[in-house]
Structures are given as C-alpha cells and as structure tokens.
Amino acid sequence: MAETSIKINLNEEIISKSKSKEVKKFFKGFVYILPSLILFLIFVIYPFVKTIFQSFFLSNNLGQLTSFVGLENYIDLFKDTNYLKTVGTTFLYVVMVVPITIIIALMLAVISNYKLKGMGIFKTIFSSTLGISVAAGSIFWSFMFHPTVGILNKGINALGGESVGWLTNPKVAIFAIAMVSIWMNIGFAYLVLIGGVKNIDNSFYESADIVGGGFWYKLRKITIPLLSPSLFFVLTISIINAFQTFGVIDMLTKGGPSNTTTLMVYSLYKEAFVNFQYGRATAQGVILFIIIFIVSRIQVKLTERLVTYQ
Image 1 (cartoon, helix red, strand yellow):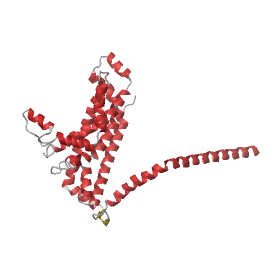
Image 2 (cartoon, helix red, strand yellow):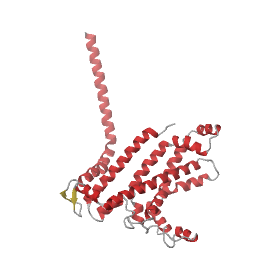
Image 3 (spheres, helix red, strand yellow):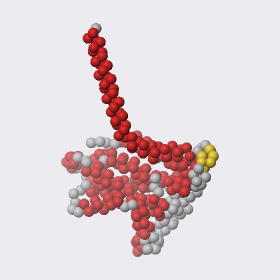
Image 4 (cartoon, helix red, strand yellow):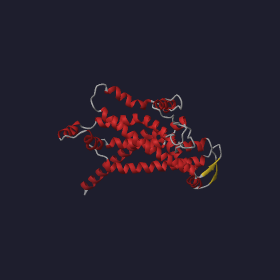
C-alpha cells in the first residue's frame, strides 16, 4: 500500500510539472505573438467590426452615425440599378483579367524553362511589371491610349483603320482597363509559376520523351497537374486583387465613361468620399467581403479535389 501511494504521488507530481511546463510554454508563446495580435486587433478586427456596425446606420458628412436603419442600406443597394450594373461590370472584369493573366503567365513560364541562349534577358522582361507601380503603369498606358498621339491608334491608322476611343468609348473602356490590369499582373503570376515549373522533377519529362510525348502532351499530363498548387495560389490572389481593383480606374477613367468602368471598390470610394454616404459605402464593403469570402471558399474546396502534389 505504501509503495502504491508513493507511485501515485510521483505520477501526480510528474503530471503537475508537465502541466506547469505547458502553461509556461503557452504564456511564453503568447508573449511573443502579443505585439502582432494587438496590431491585428487594432488594424483588422476593429475596422472590420466597425464597418459591419456602421452599415446599419445613416451618417452625416463627418462620418458620425445619425440613425439606425437596419438592413435599409443593403436593400437600397440591391434596388439600385447603377450598383447592380457595377457588380456585373466587376464580375465581367474579373472573368476577363484573371484567366488571361494566368494563361499568358503560364505560357511564359513554360517557355522560360527551356535552356535557350539569352533567356535570362527575357525572364527579366517578363517579370518587370512586378516592379512598376500602379500610378506609373497607368500614366504609361494613358499615353498609349491617347486618341491622337497614342501608339495604338497610330498603328491602327497605319493599317488603314479608324482611331479608337480606348478610354472614352463606353463599349471599349472596360476592355482597355482589363488590358492594363493583365499587363501589370503578369509579372507576379509569372514569378510564382516559373518557380513551380522549376520544381517539377525533370524525370517526368524524360519519361514523356521516351513514349514520344510532344509539347502539348507534356503540358496537359505533366506541367499543369504538377503545377496545380502554384496555379491555384495565383488564381486565388489574382481573383482577390481583381475584385479590389482601384488605382487603374482612378488614374485612367474615374469610373467613366457613363460608369462603364466603375468597379465595386471604386463605387465604394465614391459613395464614401464623394457623396459622403458612409452607411451605404460600408454596406458595399460588407457585400464585397461576402463575395470574396464565398469565392475563396469555393476555391479552397476545388483545391482539395484538384491539386496534385509530387
């Protein structure tokens, strides 16, 4: 009996010591992450909660809440034909920009993987847009799109065509904006994908050569499946960035002509800082968050099923 009680006491001491060690580890880790946690709470959680709260109110031009209106801001938005048009334009823009950007970046990454003379120079050119700011890129393209001295219209005129109002024609402006965004986003997508292509074991391609597989066979059966983690990462980031596009619109068209290039973030900006309707603006922000959240969840589910790891 005495031996049993001694063993029980020893076990209790060991358990209590292990628990105290775990508690110390927890608090030590908590102290390390506390600065980041405080910043996260101040600059992410607090603004997010305040945005949701403010979307249920009307506010004056000083941003002060005046009266509680519940879901009225959201109902008014879904009744507003201009806002619904903005949502449709945003989805059209995302559908144009994201796939084309990824396809071009993928082709450039595959080409860059070939050991050709001078390929280092082309790699620098392909990734150069990553280092260009939105403002600088927009100014560059504003000269390209100029109706009289722009190089695009000069080329069209040289071929016998008529000048195009790239940023003034309501039927063309959104495509011109998409063109700029594709050009600016290719650098990031290319760098991620070329890194993924470099990590594919060359033995897969050697096996394909043995069975007589050509370029398209290797692309479909080897490159794309084994590159799927990088592709889905680029897809996720590209979609989120496309939904949040603002700088290009602000620099080139201000949402015109006739609101044909007004995207959701720019609409939110105008509602808050031009019309001073902070309640409607925060409601638009919540709607945008919900859309991005749903799209991201769908992508996570697709990633679990379609991503292939080596």
